[in-house]
Image (cartoon, rainbow, N blue to C red; front, side, top):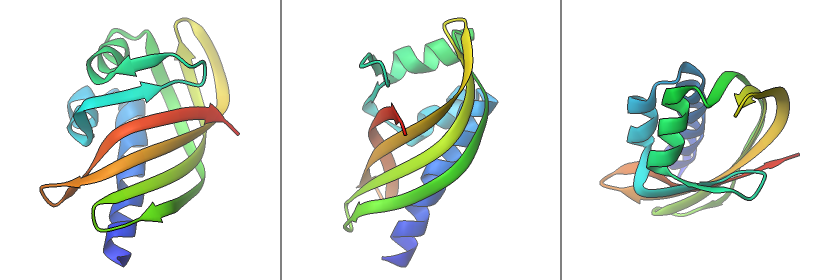
Length: 123
């Protein structure tokens, strides 16, 4: 279980890195095809929509500084990770640094964690 936990934490860190790098190919590879993101506003975005907004610059992430990460549930097939980071971003033209909490719902698929969906909020 130690490797599963560390792999899940590494998934969160890769997610943040690729988000800041606007590397939509690598970011997309972490996300299930049916992935959805629930933003802190309640807006729900599909994988394709979120990645297209990152690519177009409508959502631009300048930095993400990790403050705390924990696994709240872990089995061989499922994990829930709660990550808290200070995220400097411009979202549809409004730039701010948000204390962003992401709850990643992960599933083990073909021996690798995949992000099924993310719930975002402030902490």
